[in-house]
Amino acid sequence: MNAHPPLFEVRDLRVAFGRNGVFAEAVRGISLHVDHGEVLGIVGESGSGKSVGMLAALGLQPEGARVSGSVRFKGRELVGLPRRALRELRGSRIAMIFQDPLSSLNPVMTVGDQIAEAVRLHNPDLSRRAALDRAKDLLALVAIPQPDRRLQQYPHEFSGGMRQRVMIAMAVANDPDLLIADEPTTALDVTVQAQIMEVLAELQARLKLGLVLITHDLGVLAGHADRVAVVYAGQVVEQAGVDDLFARPGHPYTRGLIASIPDMTAQSERLFSIDGTPPALGRLPAGCPFNPRCVAAQDICRREAPPLHRKGDHAAACHFAFSATESAA
Image (cartoon, rainbow, N blue to C red; front, side):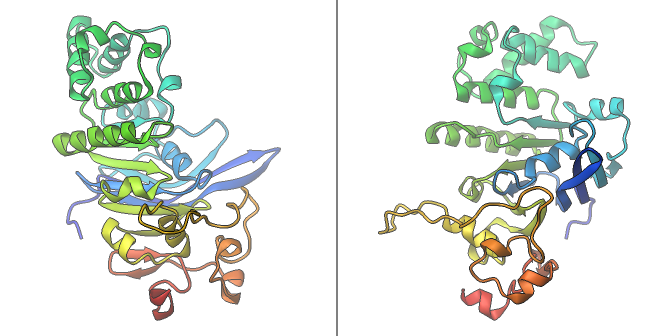
């Protein structure tokens, strides 16, 4: 156990959305932490609450959403912090890479001006020329060729992978301590995905960043994360070191995600998939939220929500986690 407090710590985070005075929780008590220089992977299906939770942790929830719980960055509480104080942290000490780089970039500003703007926003005494020089260095840092020429180009002149590199450059422009990457490889082909992950891994190691990597693909995390938090129906249902998670998954949802990774050596032509769909917001089943989709569900699973069972640094919210029966399954 680290003697120092975590770089980033979330405790019992809840996010609820309402209509006509009726609220339903999309995030239902997420707890996790990231240490200095650590890579935490957050994995789950679309709609599981992984992105909403991290956006709310940074104060980026939609208007009208209710947020409760605790979010601490270097021991400083962020929930309830004034907007101005949050804006000073975001982009300087904490940075985020959003899912769609094209919609995140301004189409009428050059890439150089956009990166320079991000630099000068947190360094107002810096000249425009110095900020553009910094932007050129950042493009080189994320392996964009001919950074001098690329500074003058617009987002539509970049490929999807190059735009994602620009977003990474903007995110690390002010040397943050924590970087949150939300689906950084979405809609990119496999080769470009590998390149983007390599850039992130090199930057994380070089700058000693704490990195939160949000994805729906456990395969992406296998070679990059130190620990993994598996999110289902707005809760962390399993959390462990990446090697331990793959070797001994304690939750049936995690086992389903691992089984869904394509195996090029398998003889079967059919890919494995988890039956059913995630529960709708505000319409959770009784007991374990995964029980309607679980092939091993028993009566207790339909009656009682499972507690979080722990075995060392491995935790899983399943009635049968780490039991002899589940180990043999």
